[in-house]
Length: 334
Image 1 (cartoon, helix red, strand yellow):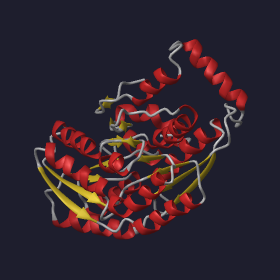
Image 2 (image 1 turned 180 degrees about the vertical axis):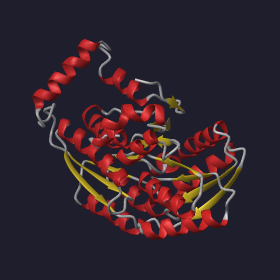
Image 3 (image 1 turned 45 degrees about the horizontal axis):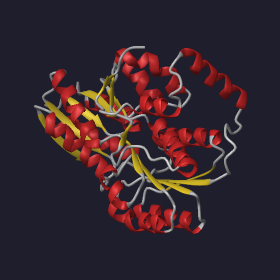
């Protein structure tokens, strides 16, 4: 497999394999693990109590990124004999109410995103006060420890943006547009801030209504028509990359379309050259490890990260890498 350009300082998969399977790193051990997993056929691999974990995210309806996060969490839940509850709402106040509901149910662990941390602070504090271990994922790495979470799992959004800026420099880009599809999401602002920090060219921001793809397309198309100097569009989510391509075609623009996050369409776009590169934060890993680490905490009082976020990205994925990941994106794990 080609070596991806990795911008993280922490290799999560390696750290976990060392901590959970330090007895061996051989192919024989991996084969034995695969055999056991196949034999389990969807049954738990442990005999610990059937704890209940709730995951509450800021996802809107139909967001494929969160389908991947949920899939990873559900896979780990089966392995760890966990009763897994998933809920979501893209309105912060409603998301906070879902956390409150999980606390009222007296769940054994909570996984939550902090896209709009101020609105979530009281709900997370209530969970912590109730003695429920909390892990934050995806967004809110800066606030996670302050709010009392055990750890944060995801990518550092500023570092991810910086990686994009460096990649744009390597590609000789001079004028880029950062498209923000969810106003108030601190992670999205941090991504664009990171791009601006390292990008040598001019960076503009465009705020769009991400819940309406026709509106996103028309706003992008209008911008590309009026600003012919734009040579790059950076979207902050995989579903918006395809819309950006349509807007580019409608505007008759030659701008390169790049994106955060990966799915099957993005992998195909990278392969055929429709897209330039993607920034993968491994959402499957975020869901899987969040459940697994909650289980470890309940079972063995383990905490990973040493007070710092556990990074799952970013990785810059290009045409050279996309073919190897295509099968994974089709099965919904990348």
